[in-house]
Amino acid sequence: MSKIRSMKCIVRSIAAIPLALAGWPLAASTPSETIVGRWLTDDGKGIVTIAPCGSALCGRISQVLDRSPGVPTTDVNNPDAALRKRGILGLPVLTGFRREGNQWASGRAYDPKSGSSYRSRLALNPDRSLKVTGCVLFICQSKRWRRMP
Image (cartoon, rainbow, N blue to C red):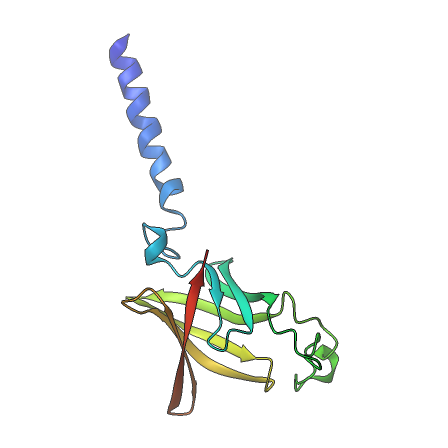
C-alpha cells in the first residue's frame, strides 16, 4: 500500500515540473534578477510596468509623474493619426522582448514624446537599474531606468 502511495507522489511531482517551469524563460529565479516590475524612466516623468504578454515581455505606461502644464494626456505625436487620441496611461512603450542570455532583445521601444519607434534591447545593470537601448540603423542610445517598489 505505501509503495503505491509513494509511486503516486513521484508521478504527481514529475507531472508538476512543466507547470513550474512554464514562466522560467521570461523571468529569472529571484525578483532582483528579472526585469518584470515597475520602472521609473530616465527623465523621472513616468513609470513603466513591464510584464509578460504572450511569450514575450512588454511595458506600458502605468503612471505619469509630470504634472507640468501642457503635458499631453494622449498619444499626440504618433505618426498614425488614428492612434493620436489613445491615452498615455496604458500606452505600450516596450513590445516583443525575449530573453537572450543576460539581456532581453528583439523588442521595440516607442517614444511617445517623438512618436518614433526603435529596435531595442533591455539589460540589467550591476546596480540593478535597467539599461534601455534603442537603435536606428547602427546608432544606438541607452537610458537608465530605476526599479520602483
